[in-house]
Image (cartoon, rainbow, N blue to C red; front, side, top):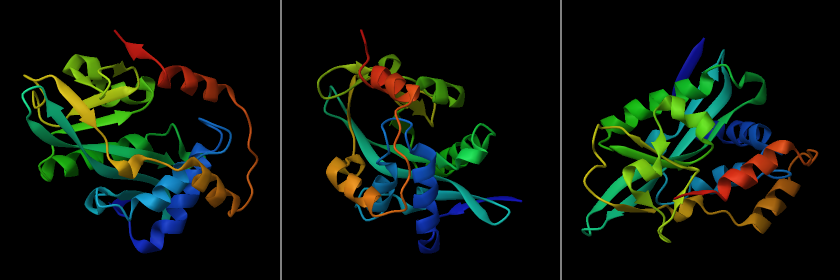
Amino acid sequence: MMVIRNETAGDYTAVETLTRRAFYNIYIPGCVEHYLVHCMRGHADFLPELDFVLELDGQVIGNIMYTKAKLVGESGMEKDILTFGPLSIAPEYQRKGYGTRLMEHSFVRAAALGYDGIVIFGSPANYVGRGFQSCRRFHIATEDERFPAAMLVKELVPHALGGERWVYYGSPAMEVDEKAAARYDDSLEPMEKRRLPSQEEFYIISRSFLA
């Protein structure tokens, strides 16, 4: 039986473990996402009401976490929006629709809380099927006025982001001290760090921008 519910303190270790397993060696040799999860819960921008785990037959196999973010329009208008990540599914359950179910559940709950937009950084191949589009289509840029290929946008309310040119400001909650993350990882059960082709793919997409 599958259940999606809010994370509790009793889930913390299981969530960090599955996050580590889900991301290890995908983007870099090792990963930092489990350390991000470890730190994020204590940040003021973290939204516990949008922190969900997916249980399958009593076992936590997935997690999604949200933080606040904002857009500032050319008129000076500020809009509170959301970002999420990491979205983690245990490796043996990936590509089976569980990540989609977590996202769709969270989208409904986020809209019910009054949020109308989400901006994330991720591979377009993983998210365009869930309604995300290029930031360029919504005139949402970074502070340096560029449009990263990996910056993706979803409107929870149709046309909520129209009529302005926006600058995206993410939360400091999403920033990772890589040296601290490495020390934290070293304190856990050893996993083999490897170089994989997915790391080069990430390098390319994370440094690509749209005209």
